[in-house]
Image (cartoon, rainbow, N blue to C red; front, side):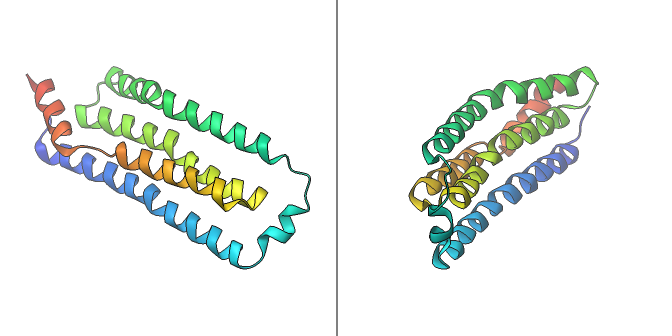
Length: 152
C-alpha cells in the first residue's frame, strides 16, 4: 500500500523534471535573440545547408516524437509494474519518458536557427515544444486517484 506522502514525493519529482525542461525553452529563445542581434545571419547565409531538408526532417521527427510518446510512456509504466513498483513510480516512469520524447522538439528550434539563421521557422518549434511539455505535465489528483485505485 502506498501512502499519500510517497505519491506526493514522486509527483513533486515529476513536476521538478517537467518545469526544468520547460525553463530551458525560454533560454533557447534568448539564445536565438542574442545570436540574431549579433549578426549570426551573415555567417550562416553563406553556407550550403539545405534549409528545407532540415526543416522537413525536424518537423517529421517532432511529429513522430509527439505521436509515439504515449506508447513509450506506457511501456515505461508497464516495465515499472512488472518490477513490482508502486503506482506513483509507474506514473513517474511514464512522465520521465514523456518528457524525454517532448523536450527535443524545442531544442530543434534552437538547432534549426543555428543552422539556418531563420528565426521565423525556429520559433514554432519552441512554441510547440513548450506547449507539449505544459500539456503533458503531471496531474496531482490523477496521480492520487491512480494510487487509490491500485490499493483496492
